[in-house]
Length: 96
Image (tube, rainbow, N blue to C red; front, side):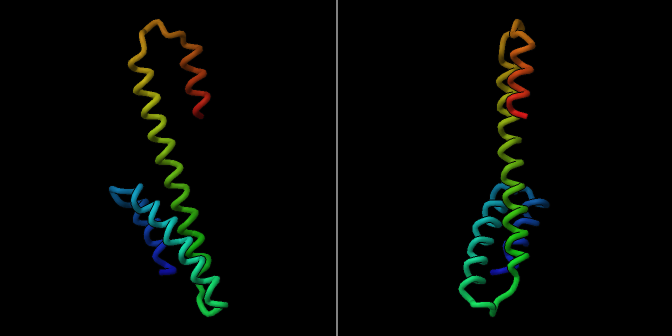
């Protein structure tokens, strides 16, 4: 279970369903850290578990940011043409 977090994180990078694999990488990574802590030094792989958690969190953050940018872009395209450009620039800067 220890190296599986990193495997899920890498599958998230190279697969069609990164949301599923990034969540699995985070959950399995934290479970692996609990197992490592409970083993009193008999189990290794703490670095792989932490790497899986970090990669999973970065993927999840990028996916959420992408969803937000697509939603804002769609919303801005549906606005009337007389929308002041300062408001549009403010909305984009707010999300950046």
